[in-house]
Image 1 (cartoon, rainbow, N blue to C red):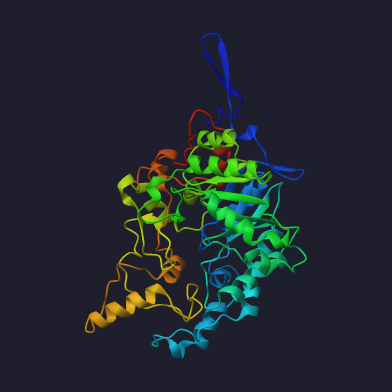
Image 2: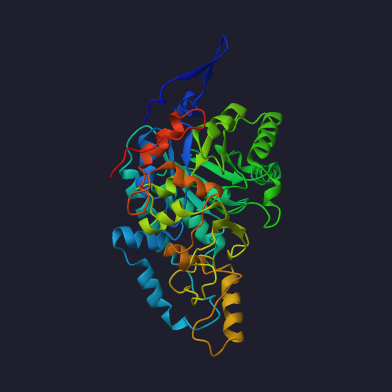
Length: 436
């Protein structure tokens, strides 16, 4: 099975050409070197601690996500953050005005420190664990809640923070007074040179460059940094080369991590040979045993065909989002759960889904069940694993494992997928050992 996990080569006439593997490269932070494989931070707790810990054990970098961290804490550690918040604001459930539904910042910090701290306590191996922090989790107090999440992550000893889902022009400043501000690895996700230029200009006075930059292309899963109609006009390699040229021009030695649509080790090598310092991958890890998706949802990913994967505008964040077209979140008309969650409430206590929900209720006052097609209650559906976001190449997952006699597909281990990226050549994918 892993026969090709050795230095391989082929003969072309008298010419012997060595095939490079991801393992022939290293991601460098100062004097430290890592396997240049980073597992993306999929929320809500899809990139689990177990998944991130495997990446670190194997010498790479794993992400956890702090999306809906209070709910994640309740599930993992039997805390009662969501229950207590729901009880506090229960009287407001039928009120269209959600401005009073605020997060208790100290309790938010407790949940963040608990989730991250417990993960870091278990870390073994030479790799790193980062946390993915989305700016678009505005939480009815964008600046205050993000400051709390970022600083609590540093308190808890996280190795690094990836700033995602937003432009984050002010996020570094929110951490500037923390004693670990210059110690922890801090990175940003961009999809263009222009976004990077603006970020660097806005943060110049802090004298603190990002430790890494993730360039995310249009084939990534979940929220995309492109327009709903024009994402097809871009490709990751072109954007990567543009960013590499800009960094060279500006004499900035910042590692660039390519992400979005990197399905094989050979795909990764193409970017590493082009000058990327590493790759971020996620889709193939959604069907591993360590991933937080329920097994029945993993089977939906395996079964997906190419035309089952769509990009739509149902996210209340305003960003396009890639998902399976049969995701239960599309068209659902559940009542907004802001009193329990409310992670997408803006600074005025508003959310695009609330507006769409109220519009449909007003249009169908006698209907017991309504359908909201243009937006979705992202908090509740992500919490219940009913929003099946995915990468473009999800339809290829069925080719990475065996189909069992009962029709279901065999799940993979995170170690197997990681090593397949690390050692494979010639666009090969290693099949797992059969478990049936």
